[in-house]
Length: 146
Image (spheres, helix red, strand yellow):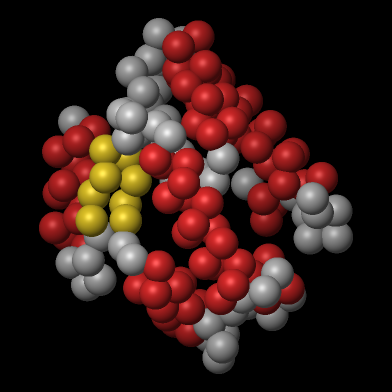
């Protein structure tokens, strides 16, 4: 959603909040029409969880909270590996959020925030994600959401 917004980089942090408003509205609309919703996001604040929880409740939907976990160093390495696979030599897209926001330190902070937030949510199902075991992780995820 974020990268589809005009001037999203130049308008940060306002665009941070705007992307969440769009995500909430889209999730609400989709659930109201009877569809399932998966939020592929790093939930870094309890407010984000609670907002999606309220949306699920308002639509009589079942909320399943799942987090794919790896240790911080592995998570940072995987992020950079994905960036390099996209042609970014350093692993960071030039001018991107991570490139302008402190790179590894920003990723570490995101990881720390996610772990702290998950710790506040007693129903979060944690799946350990092991690099190069995509099919195994996918099967574990299907077992949780089915």
